[in-house]
Length: 178
Image 1 (spheres, rainbow, N blue to C red):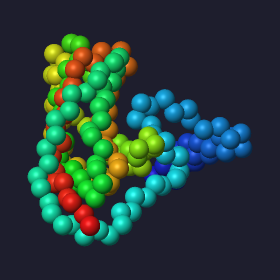
Image 2: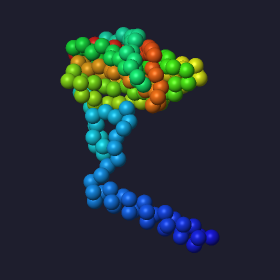
Image 3: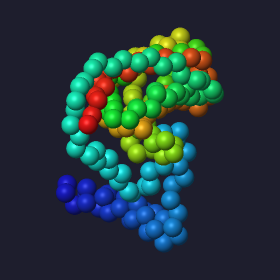
């Protein structure tokens, strides 16, 4: 029994190894066609290390954002965090409306600097979708937005879907730092 399974694995391993070696030798990499891509390099990690700061005061934060929809996606930017401030997002809730039978693919929150570069991505799967084109998200998140950065929300439908409208609300705390 073990001998038969071993032979079957060997038959599968040779084509897989050949494909990997060919890809390595030619420098070919799979094309990135996902709308979820960011400026992060494949195989490279991006670390986000916040400097130690003293929190002077903290207040509840809640902001609602109407996203701009076009084609298969909707996106919008929460305001940039001001000087001596730090935003700690703990929950994001969104409602997206699409054409009937539109299929929600996924979404994400990008942490963005003033130059537009992305330093962190947190994904937002749907909690519930209907055949009538309503997709709701209500996710606990852990996103720390430092001074002079903001959070961008992007929501995506599967190819062929038509996004019509979306609104998101972010909850957390806004800290004044020293």
